[in-house]
Length: 275
Image (cartoon, rainbow, N blue to C red; front, top):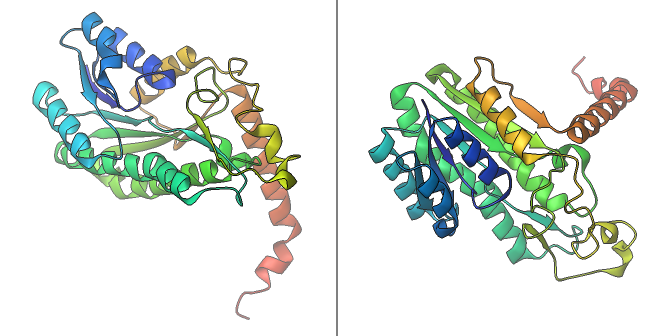
């Protein structure tokens, strides 16, 4: 039996993952900005589910959630940084306050949660940290520049952390989902108030007001939750786990294009070596 701390459990993948973890008999500290939304899980799994109010930009709430987990369950074995949201805007349209809030939630919030759980994991010389990113940084779709940048930052931090904590018995995995039938393209998707007509043919096709993909995505979040538990519970953990056939296809195409460009420009790239 393990103890999980999962952020962003009020809906979507976080909620499905919390349900699946509890259904399998594990302990789970389930969090949301409004913990009242988690009452049904606490009532269904008494003694196993501990609901905590947690906005990942609030360091006091983070400290309280981690301390509560330590007190009730003795420690956190698995952290899943799932809380986050999307933002659509052309780079030129992005508003400073909105972009700062996006990075506070998608990057600095998860970092604060990791820093809060790491002392306990280091002491026990065991633990797994899972950071939910996206396939978005690999494909760089118009309108998703700021969102992709926030997830790419989280991936860079995760890759470095993985090497820092591996000798301490702690594992780090990044999850890169494609499009799933959650509320990501609905309630969880924000957009800039500034709209520049010159971007109508690129970003305009993907603005929240024009997005018709919600509810039609390829991925099943319930299946994703089961896969995540199986992978995390296994002995071998991938550095990056793509989820969804669309994610695999997009990532493969992007990697092939990168390799082709490297080969095309290899002579120029290597010409800068000292002779």
